[in-house]
Length: 90
Image 1 (cartoon, rainbow, N blue to C red):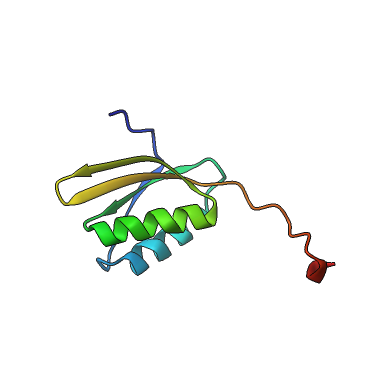
Image 2 (cartoon, rainbow, N blue to C red):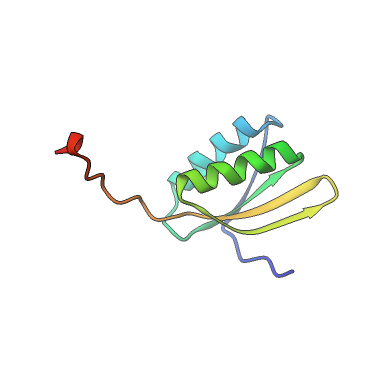
């Protein structure tokens, strides 16, 4: 499996999904759209939560590789969402 080139690796310091997602939010906020980071996690629930978070935020999971208990997920930062055009915003 070919893994795309990444700018940096983000590993959970707290061992839970909340800490990893917070670190990914901070890291990706400083990068341009299209930049890629590698998220490293050691459990399946965190992997599922990170995938759901990336989807909600408009980022793309471009690679997802497991080696034993460790998962490495390459996340590509998405473009900023289009401005809202709801009546409440006018």
